[in-house]
Length: 96
Image (cartoon, rainbow, N blue to C red; front, top):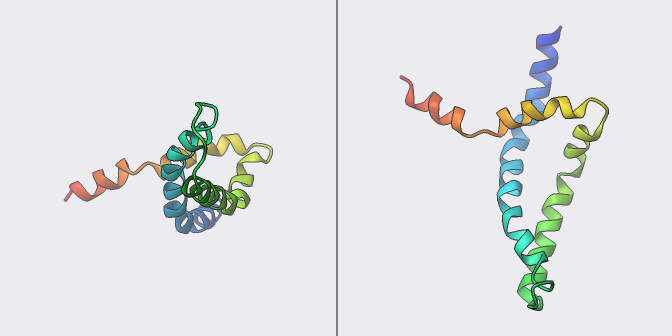
């Protein structure tokens, strides 16, 4: 019974893995863009378009992230960290 639940959860998460990784990597540039006016530089039209793209991508993840906001959702964070860790895939490829 528990195995079926785990398989269902992983079946839900596997397609989202690439999307999560892309969004996490893309957010790195978002903070620099958001802090530009505070540092004295105005946003250009390209900056505004890029900020919109970042926010749209983050908005598309909201239903999935809501899972972690539910009671007990923080217990799933170590599972998410393991799931998104790309190192375990590299180790699996290196082993014959």
